[in-house]
Image (cartoon, rainbow, N blue to C red):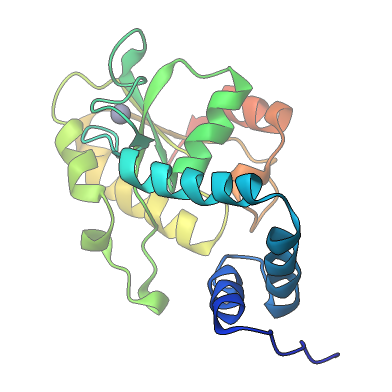
Length: 202
Ligand code: ZN
């Protein structure tokens, strides 16, 4: 391991520290990115800073599906989709991944996490109550599209137990997604096939 050289100024040090907090960015990459931003034309670096400020100022949560959106309800909830089918996912990135397949015409529900006792995340810490509330009326099918790992499976089983008595059709994605992987990394064909081949959950 080569030590990362000390930055020349406190501002650079701060930028490196902030970049280092991003997922997948280690101290060396953070340092490389910071010095890169100092080399590019000022407008380009400023445009990146503006994009970050704009996104945090304009993007919020849809109060129906809890996906990220600039409007409430979001474009998917606003109409034109099959509102009797809800696809339950862990995070907004999963919605983006499923939308890219073009194979899904229903609506979504973003839990913003999974039940994970190891991390102290219980059912009340994710958007589960809101999902149950949505399922009180006129829902035909709930597709459980959580990541194929321990927490995803545990959350799926928990929802199946809660919604089992409701008579709503409960399905989960077909096997074939890389086990332990993230839904968002599955390619479109695999994801579309997993959705198409969904089976009864529980
Ligand atoms: Zn929505």
